[in-house]
Length: 249
Image (cartoon, rainbow, N blue to C red; front, side, top):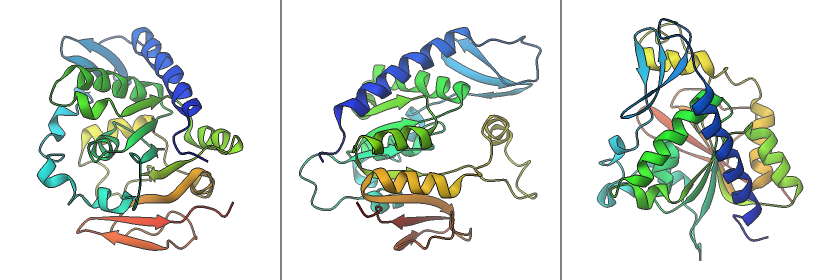
């Protein structure tokens, strides 16, 4: 079946409207240390105490420059050989969308799944600003946001015999004790994103909808996501990408 079905994109756009509503209605006392959203002149922020976090794709400009994009390990891992049309992907663990942005810069049409409403709101705001910036608009035009549980989203699409070329996974896992306090912004995200406890279900859902491959991002010395052995891996100094084939159809 043809990849990137129109119904997938329509569903993602509907979810995108829900994100906008969340961003406009989520509020908390400015004195609160609990994570909450604050709208400022330069965008939407996630705030907790003295920590402030905003999605921003403009900071990735040098990383996605035409002369450098093909050397990105992520792009090498997700590359689809012999594609006659622009390749399609689902980033099933989107977070702030940086990996999605890199894939879109490499030519992929990307649907980003993010289940936490606050992080999804940050991502929606960053995407709006990227679309309004002439430096990033052509990349952001290939990105669509779905505020949804990715396992349910992919299972629903697979039940309708819909596919994409590549599914990318970068699940949140418990931090090591030594590194847990090194980055306050990462701590803020971890306060909202529960560590992944559904690795088997996530990988199976991804392999059911992927037409070409599933790519899983891991720390270079980390164990595999599940007991399933990847078909191959591409590793750098700190990051490894494990590559799995689709499930047999």
